[in-house]
Amino acid sequence: MDLHLDGKVVVITGGSQGIGKAAGLAFAKEGCVVCACARRQERLDQAREEFQARGFELFTQKTDVTKPEELEAFADAVMEKYGRIDIWINNAGVNQYKKLLDYDYEDLMRIINTNLTAVIVGGKIAAERMKETGGGVILNCSSFAAVAPMAGKAPYAACKSGVLSLTRTMAAEFAAYHIRVNAYIPGGVNTEINKANVERYGDKLLQDIPMQRFGEPEEIAQAMIFLASDAAGYINGTALEITGGKRCTQNPLFSYEAD
Image 1 (cartoon, one colour):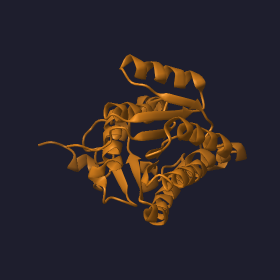
Image 2 (cartoon, one colour):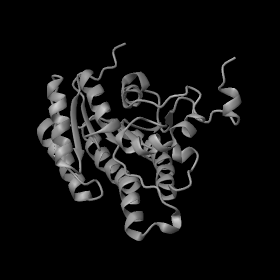
Image 3 (cartoon, helix red, strand yellow):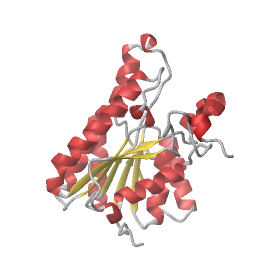
């Protein structure tokens, strides 16, 4: 199937590691121009080297997505170099495990500004440029925490729920400019940010997953490829769960056992 992605300019926030980097490589394999930003220059340099070792180029710029002026500058740099943005992926995120009473104001603002405010700002920045070049696709990263909130992740879950609502509103408002907006909902994925959690609670977490394994970043990336492609041309304002069937029944231990 021709996904008609060749030559598309793809922007990925938080694109230096984990799902963001895997998505970048997947889009590069489809012939896309990939542009990534992240807060840490050393991570971006490592990602660029990995892309080059695989025969791909990666445009990078150190960017703190919680600072609108830096996000705007990143978008401007992409536009100056490539003249358009076809796909914008609001992937950057941070997480923290604490009881709600233990969060201080700085913790809360960091989580809210990264996981929700930056998605609002990033979506607006992307749409402003896409409407001038004929349209595009915006993908927003949500989380299974938006489907079933988790104790110890209250602000994160609230933000990711907000992303689902925001995605629907963006889809409705941007459709007139031929811009589709959808969200993706990763479940348990083997990434650096989840490493400690998997090591500590892995067996318990697997009890909720019928497939009895965690996902890989590359599996999330393939779903993102589909959502961004012409094959998903009539999919708009929705969210795709990529979770291995996590909690698809109320009685997982019974349902997930083989005879």
